[in-house]
Length: 35
Image (cartoon, rainbow, N blue to C red; front, side, top):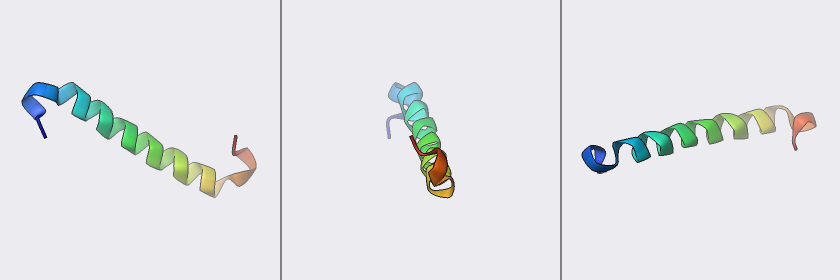
């Protein structure tokens, strides 16, 4: 990783991965709310 050069991008990518994981889990756990 290029933390010094792309620190913000890496952080944004990490946050996106976390949100995707939470969203994926929520959709699987709550299929009735799957859009």
